[in-house]
Image 1: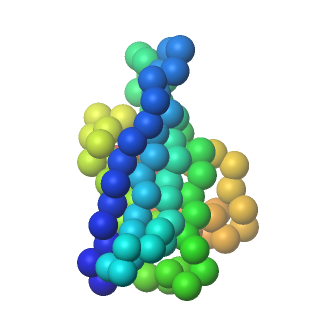
Image 2: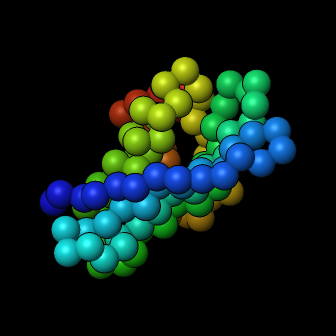
Length: 101
């Protein structure tokens, strides 16, 4: 599936709060990833990942994570609070590519 991904965010005191929104080929929102990065920190924190039910199990969350890693290639990506489903996803993607990559 050909997802279209847009990014944006806002500078905040001491850092940046950003997001990636994924759109399905028909233009409807399919999911998003919110993140936080602090100035001078070597980490990026995932604040929220959500893929809408109709688009789940198609690799979209992993694609959004890849975009985040492309945006911050020198930083370690860390998950924030995780649901059970989110923790299972994070464990799976971390096995394929270490958390610090």
